[in-house]
Image (cartoon, rainbow, N blue to C red; front, side, top):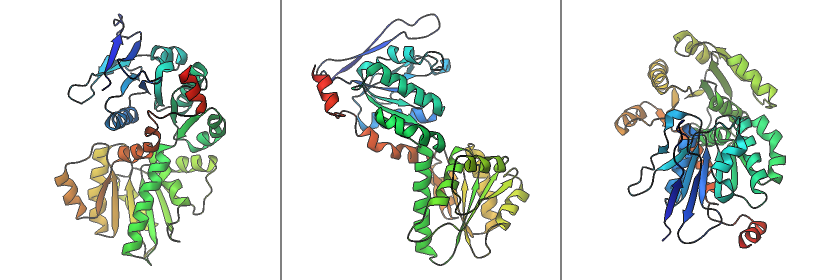
Length: 354
């Protein structure tokens, strides 16, 4: 059995931990810990996912937010809490990575919420560690940006994941199949309420997806800045098979919802995806839409904090389904996480043996 010990320098006056070094008492593997850069929603989710797959793994978090504290809980009895380095990547990327001992790491995940910064972190890590290094994974939600970087990053063995795109595709594919089972001949209209990163990813997926010859017949995008969001998709090179309808307005305004529904084909079933960042607003809108449509629509409600099972079961009777965006995203990096503990390439093996 391998035992991990975190050896920490004293905390300085600003609450920073100057460095973290991870030792393994036995089984001296060349890569010993995971570095998570950014401890927002995605960073927390990915760290939990990594630990759930391999509880013995050591980890280090890097984030500039001092409110996080010097440690984050591992949520497992008998396991050491995870140290946090409070550093600002934008001013000192290489210094942050050196402090986290990137040369000894097994995996680095850049999940800061800033696509360009995530790429920069992985590039800096590759400069430091050279060819052998840890598995490097950058979350990039802007598809045009990801496409621009992808070929260069691939040559450096840096992986990018557009987590929103993959999550949106999986969610839509599932519901297209369910629609085909219920109403094979009826068209399906998709109304997206809240056109942030996930909402626009869902609109893009609806343009491209075809399941058993069936495609969405109408896309409505409801947002206070719907036209600007639509232009961003156009500028990013999205090829429109079906021109989305932009409905600008507050989704909590009943007239905005009525306008969105009037745009749908008369015979179509309606799939309404509530994708705002506000769980409570999504739930309020769910009740309002469900009353107005009276069973005509299936409602997909995004929830960061999954509601109690009793609430879910009541809403399920009204054609309301919750989707946990975090779990959709986490499932997309399972293949990457499976690489933890495995050799990357012959060059890596030669480097570890010398």
